[in-house]
Amino acid sequence: MREPTMIWKRTAQFHLNRWRKEARVDNIRLPLSNRIISPGMEWTLAKGRYEWGEARMSARVLKPGESVLELGAGLGFVSSYIRLNTDAGQITCIEANPDLVPYIEGVHRLNGISNAAVVNGVAQVADYPASIPFYCRKDFWASSMEPAVDYERAVEVPVLNFTNLLATARPDVLVMDIEGAELDLLEADALPHVRAIVLEVHKDVYGRRGLERLFERAKHLGFHRDPNGTVREVHTLVRN
Image (cartoon, rainbow, N blue to C red; front, side, top):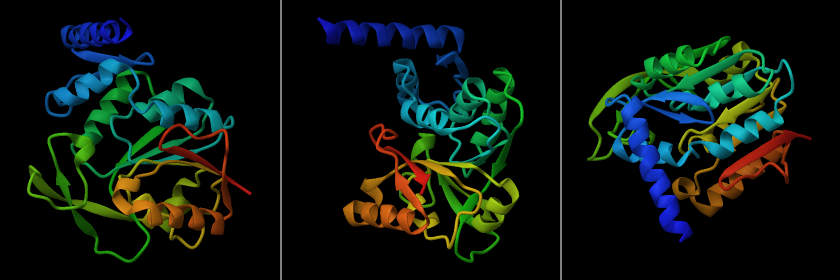
């Protein structure tokens, strides 16, 4: 009877969220904007485990006063969770999808989140033009820099030099959920100031060999995997 009970609870939560026009995950309020939140994402939020591992591993590794650079801010949930559950310092949120930036800022206001900046852009290690195309899809989490026939529109997004970004934000903790681009960013020559990395890996994008390369690069940069800092596809890497 457990599975039918869970389905009933999620269905009830789904309709409650629709009635109050917002989801609440770990007491963080997320408005159900029709422009941003698809029905599929509504069900994910109703389950109450949206970005569960990333949020908790980030909070776990942070020390009081440490600054955070989040690449791939999504709905603003992880940054809100960090602010409400830790004594973190400055939080800098980078989000490629321009549609999400005002939504994230709204989530921060709604939840009383301060000392958190939201910037639209794509972090890159190599030399790139001032902007690159970003392909927006109905499900925001499927939007990416990879073109496909199912995207709704393409927008030009500012390119942010990763080295300059690290120098400006000076993060102690780097949080990454960028749909496979984490492999490219770990090709950087160094990660100054960074003590720990929390990242969601995307083996479906770069395969087993790519995953091996990612951890090889992390080791080269002076990081090792925290054996107690892994939840499904979310891994915590700490400075040796």
